[in-house]
Length: 302
Image (cartoon, rainbow, N blue to C red; front, top):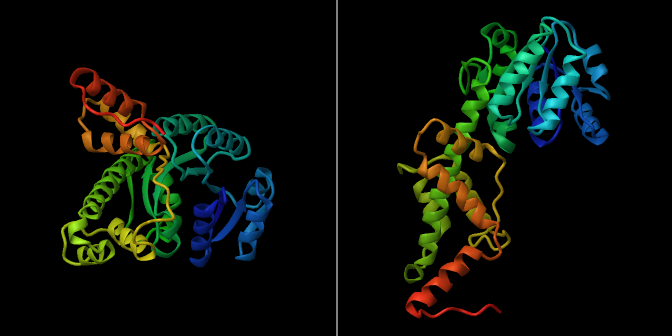
């Protein structure tokens, strides 16, 4: 099957390679000439403009957009829709907000263009392991791109599925990432408690490997944790500064809108904010208040 790919970052480039390995013809575009040349070396057809993407794909054309969420995605989909026609298909496989995806589907739908929002999970391991794909949109559009989904997923009939109407794919991926925040935070806190128990001198890497077999907390995240601890048991080369890409915030906001309690996900998001503070003003305030009402000792700033 022929497919266009816009956005050749690490994940997009890996997806191109997986598609090529499955026998698909991929026409690839990126603003980086080096990125285009890299996928051309693997067998993709390079395109230097969106016009070339449209011209080098047979109708009905299928184009996968894999760029950062927000304005870049908005602009790319709008520009692409101006170059495609009735019956063509745009797939947004990035981390767009599901509300944006509903809007995008309506906008391109006015031109007779199909649209799918595909929540894509797998990260840097997707090339080898396959990608988990959560698809929102109309069934006929899903069927149109089925060979692509079967090739990107871990198996032809596993790891991917049509989960609902437009927006449902990115909504599901948003919740997936919110859950991920909570799982990661629980592992991080547990390992920190064990590290703090100096009396036992626990080998955290050893324990992570014990838990990989038979334990109720075994998971792929634990496997990756074990890998990280094998490389550096004290994580001495890593600063405790944790970013968030937006999905956790959106999940918490959605929970509030729906009156659904989500304390674990919310607190895990807040913990990431804490990690970015070199010093907490709130902690200073707590120390000051304890000193004021109880005369408790305070530590002076250096």
